[in-house]
Image (cartoon, rainbow, N blue to C red; front, top):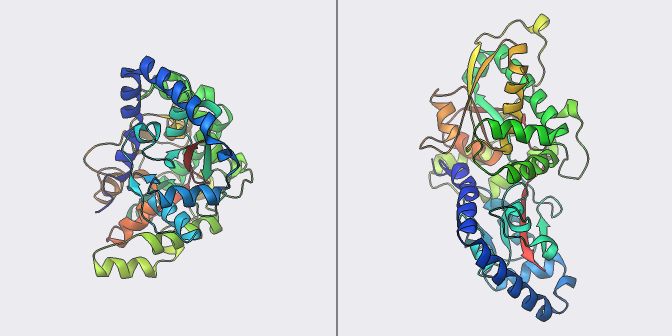
Length: 372
């Protein structure tokens, strides 16, 4: 599959940025302060530019960046919105190109790279409020990201297991969003891949994308994991427009998709007395990357005993290996996986019969960050 390593590679930015920033933090901080002062004094009215003016200026200069690993579709939709070519610079897995002005509009996830740009903890660039963002949700081109999925075959054969796992996981997510500091501690204790400071930042920012929809409306705790039809449809529509597949059959299949081909809402609630016990009591879920608060709901559900409450023993498996989460679920290596909706759409177009059973992130976490 073309997007086999999409998410694992994207999140590799986290460790790479930390190592790069840490290795020259003192020098970087000094040069950054000087460059910011020079830029601020010469920028004039740059802060008064509209998002449209800023996007057009960056696009015309060839300085819009993205990783090109799965969420470039939002950037392409944004550029199309303003009548611009959909070209972008391939962004590396650090924010060095942004720091050096090689890219003036750099892709960043609000819970990850944006924190590494703005904050002053170890490994971050400490730009603070001297940067601004262009939000995909505000621009009307948002695509939904982290979901929970399994194979259609597994869901058909183990419906109570799927319901139980989804219910316990979403309970974990609701608790994590209400108690982000505690969630960060739980994830850190589970073998965090990032610093404690960045872990806490991530927890608070992830909570926002789980409990706020694409329109800025709050999502209540009992609705965590819901599948907003409008947001799901927009994600599918943009996927159809911007995902390019070389295989003709796969491309035609992609264009034929409806939401019913990729998701089901029937597994969002579980009543043990009515539904019965889980058919399979020992299950596994593969994440997209190493332990971090991007996945805090599953770690919290495990630590709080929510999985035990519904009769499940759960093995949480880190991502980032040679086998992507979609492939791992498809071939039966694991029972559940976490991926972006666009990844699942792409996988199904290629012949994997996967099924989204919960939508954890309710809005896009992708922004374009720029220096004011």
